[in-house]
Image 1: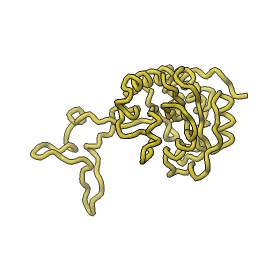
Image 2: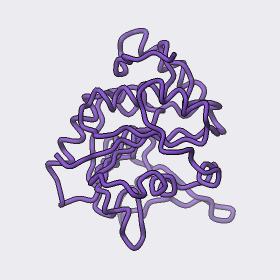
Image 3: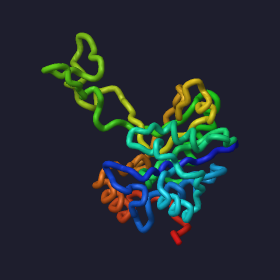
Image 4: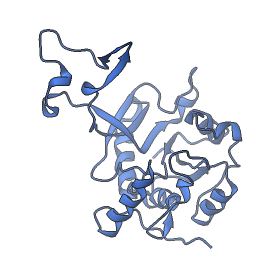
Length: 243
């Protein structure tokens, strides 16, 4: 298998959920489950955490990740693009592929990652990357944008047929939305004239159950605790405790 590196982004700032990367879940900080899942998958040659925080870096090291230097402040703002920190971390490295594993998806396990990697390798050079997706709950066929005093549909509407916004969800075309569970890409996408984290030929990875669950709002951490406590979703086991 081609050498592959896991990249775990963990900047300190977060407007919606303060300190989310270190929020406790079932006795460990969220970032611990990203590291544990990467290790459990057995598919990575290295596990790197990109952070602008020495506190997060210390916790990440305690759970077994490497810190390739702190992320520069200008790459850790609310509007910073992922490509900036990925290029910063990957500069000078030789791995053929990389995977982004965000700490906010605690129920993405080693088995999830291994399944995704198997699909990525199966598709090989036919794709640039593979991205986790799930069926959207709020269908864009029922979404609108402001247009002066009116609103107009986001999607083009069919001619001489019932408008999409007036149909039942089950009769609408299936549309998938990306979730933050995982991404895997060939490192060559970073060397293109326009570097990206995905390239242009993107394959879907269909998450199952709670694999795509993401902690994006304060209520989500309580929901995650309930899922874990009730055994309805379990993160990867964490073998190393913070010293």
